[in-house]
Length: 339
Ligand code: AMP
Ligand code: MG
Image 1 (cartoon, rainbow, N blue to C red):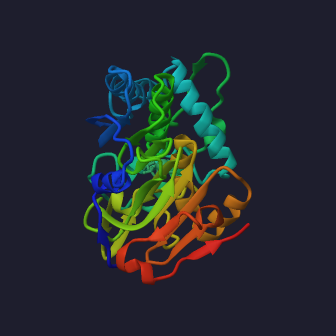
Image 2 (cartoon, rainbow, N blue to C red; image 1 turned 45 degrees about the horizontal axis):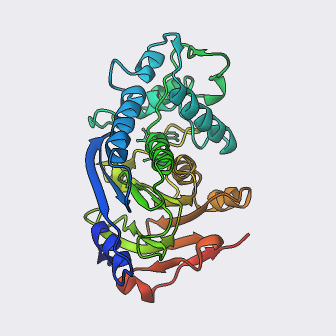
């Protein structure tokens, strides 16, 4: 697939060109949740907003990490009875509701299977079928009951919030910025971009959708114009390995224990909620194109862009007017799924 190389910085600059009023800009780059993150705020704003956002992200990372032995999630995964802190309870509430709504395509109890494939350590292997069957006995979000202040997981069950944690963090940062009176900002958590308001020049933001076949995060295949939304992408390219000529990706189909394999290379979800967009980008990847389209018809709070391994592009009706292919892709077509 041919691509146009546009730097995300350049995208921001694109939206600044022709700027009638030049807004002051402040930004911060940090490394958290295994991701380089960029926060940018515009306007005469609270000087402490960025450092408070940074602290908030580190706090969430400390609570939600599966590997940090001090984290609340780690204690839960050890089978301990844990008094949940408000953010952990909140993210679990939202995630479990989406596990249920997606019919288990999203399942935050998938961790034992993700680990068996080596995606937690990068020591990859293809587990045998018996191993996967045994591990799948421990995967079932419906057995996680959030009642009262404390939670104890059923024996052998372990949680992985990798599919939702960045989206949740993004929503929290957006809430903090809004509380600080900031109405123009870009929260880029690597694969999860959330914007507040329009871009500084008053036009919608232009968010690039990465080419799954591209060499870097700066290779874009399409652009979505948007305001006050999160744009979150799940891609095979994020983590995968090849064995005996077969490529295995990190998004697991909880009904089989094997990497989801419906011919999709990436799924982008656009929604006012970054938590929803993050959860659904993972879930639609598991569903595949046709089930994803059906699921979209059952809700009215998100839109999608599906990119197939064959380069085909399918989008949902709600973004048809704000979606365009980048560069030479412009001569190609894409299919619009309607309600
Ligand atoms: P994302 O990049 O948001 O799609 O999240 C992918 C990550 O979520 C993986 O690296 C796993 O840690 C975890 N994961 C994989 N498959 C699933 C699934 N079906 N449901 C929930 N989490 C998953
Ligand atoms: Mg996700």
